[in-house]
Length: 439
Image (cartoon, rainbow, N blue to C red):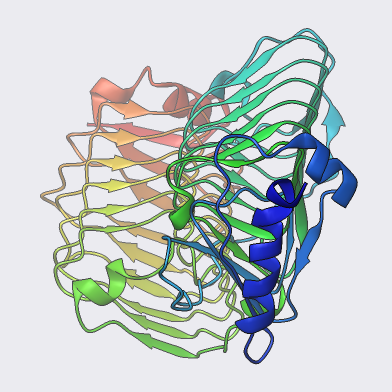
């Protein structure tokens, strides 16, 4: 009997002799699965700390709760650096309708709205796969198993009776609960700033590494995985970062050290200076930074990813990109930047992505330049740009997507190369009485 309890006795002694200023260190090794009789009698103890908890990578644990929990390599009990908040709220109304089909086997990009979001909550009674790169606005609930592929964003909760297998770099803003195994892929984040969530598995819980969870974790069988030293669980109290008004990044290393989307919804940020050598601005990096007025971009920039500056309502009135090497402006990159009046594009630009400047209500002038290499203006790119009056579309453009200039009530004239005459976005303008000049 003493042998059965020895690991827990050792852990208890270690806790009693190694706590400092509310920091709790747990150093417990268990080979294989813990003896069920021991843990049944102990009722699966909850390890708590009022400040910081550090555990080694060889332990198995069931209930963890602390303001900050770090899982570190064995015998390395240095407090891990505090992890800056990584999850940004998406500016989406979470009041969604139920999807009518309960026997849906795949959720895919073809179900997206014009805004690039799947605007439903799903209740499914068969196994379901969520395909890569989609954004689901509501919850995902399933009576069977759920497979979530890489780079998916789910704004609600995930509930399943069967196994939940989550891919790489997934973002889930709500809770994750399953009665079966839960696999959390590398780089996946669960939770969001300023809100504690729960991750609960009735069976095994597998962390693949570089994961963050904002809140409480519970599993029936215990943590498993080779990358437990890379898991960070971050609390509400740890996420209250100081606000800044001006961000100056002096070199590429400083930018690369930032957590993804760290300045999204930063309410006081007014000016950003980005370093030379930077080639892309990652998705949602400054999304919803509503006070942002000025951005200094480096000449090395080649891509602005989706939602990078979306909902930056006070972004400067004249956005000059002409000194950069930007090739692609991705979906919704500048959506709802309502202070924009003029955009000067670089000659290197080849594609304006879907809804890239959607709902820029005061945008009145688009300057593509006489040497423009632009080829694609995707659907909804300049939708609801109420102030647009005339647009000159460059000679190299071959594609103008549906509703590219939809609901631009003051648009009276568009000059376009003849090859684009049959493009859906141009046909729509002709049907609405806009003067289309073919060159």
